[in-house]
Length: 263
Image (cartoon, rainbow, N blue to C red):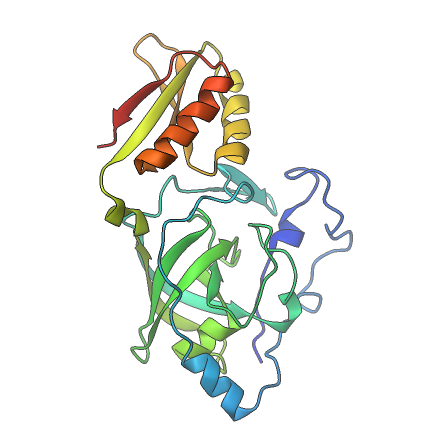
């Protein structure tokens, strides 16, 4: 049985950060209230989880929820990375199971402890990472679709199935290497869409939040040479997706739109 601190989307969504959440806790959070456990499985079922095929790595549209760019949990602020590209980190991994099975993740999909998924504090969701257990050499590809763990000593929270595949479901934690997999690198050149000219940063931030919820791709605020705030959408891969996003942004009448090749 694993005991650890885990905060899934139902806890994250407090009124100060996300609106309209009915699942935010009203009582103090203690270790007893968030104790987790493993499902009771026969050896054959555990063997099946241990041999689950890795998910197919493919480009995914970013979730409209859970992607920041900044969010706050228990008084601490976290920043979501613009891209998973190049991410590589070594540290402690934990896992979550029965306690959260079926509850909504930060991407608003139900958590399934029998799938190869994970929670991460700063990687954009969804994305794919390869996790290697440094204690036994086993590895697995998982899809990051949730936020956490909010325990400073841990860098990733894996589904129970992923922990079984990596061989540490009985001990609760393990030292791992986490490396992002850049699915979009197989699609050729990428582009950025630049638009808007806002005098006030607060105005640019409001539009940025609106676009993040609509487009499913990263949106950044950049400062122009004229000291105006502009929005940068992307990277965008493929001509079809570029045409789609350009058409959507054109209807919003946010000023001149410029498409440039991403560096």
